[in-house]
Image (cartoon, rainbow over all chains, first blue to last red; front, side, top):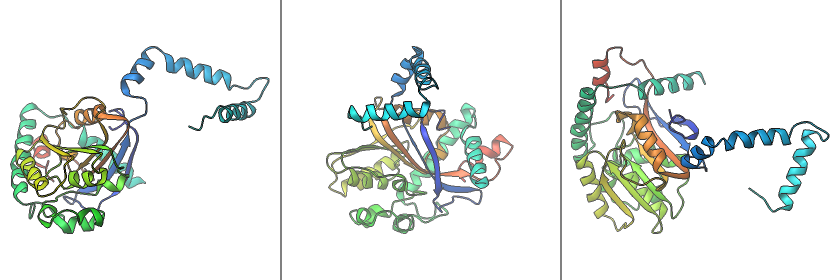
Length: 86
Length: 216
């Protein structure tokens, strides 16, 4: 249900020990809203940006003259050289 | 794991139950009636401890509860400690959905400090009155209490960094609508931290019995 509402990382963490009846149990839940807001995500989805980007990503990292593992290591090196630490 | 899986299934079945308008009205009226009494004192209304004993059992941070007076703490009637689900940083903006007498709201306000802001909403006017009285017993300045429905939150999109709730969603007739509203008012990367009751047994087959069991 949390996922249906748009949340990510929905998690049933554990019991609280406070039960309001013999057939109910006190529980702790948590979830998160993605860094990309729903409006922006919707815009990107309607424009097919996400699927196109995924196609590009899969193609770029596919096996070819250079194997997938080497491509990832090159990308990692380029990211670090560019100062990307995210 | 099996028990947890059953629990999640029960949550989904319990939380997606469709209600007729009349049943919904009865539930909301019953909630208002019960919590107008709870606002006076939670003693005797719940199967679990309330007040300071509950806060201690649920492992609320001692340095926070010591900053609130005994009369404020005695009004606590939560089902868990939502603050165990993540840290609340100084300067954050928090919404407490179904704040009741406002103990969690006031603790959140102490956590976010003067740079932060906390809003507590509740559908019961008596609870909002009690929460406001509790606020006036403190020197906390960064809290607002207001009567509102979780299903129609009166706030702009992306207003809050964290939404907390304690023992409330199980009572909300349209839980999906409320969760969608919470999602709307959360900022990107915002967090939802809930303590609540889930049904672990079977739902009564008869709709009337289900409505009458709403407060279990």
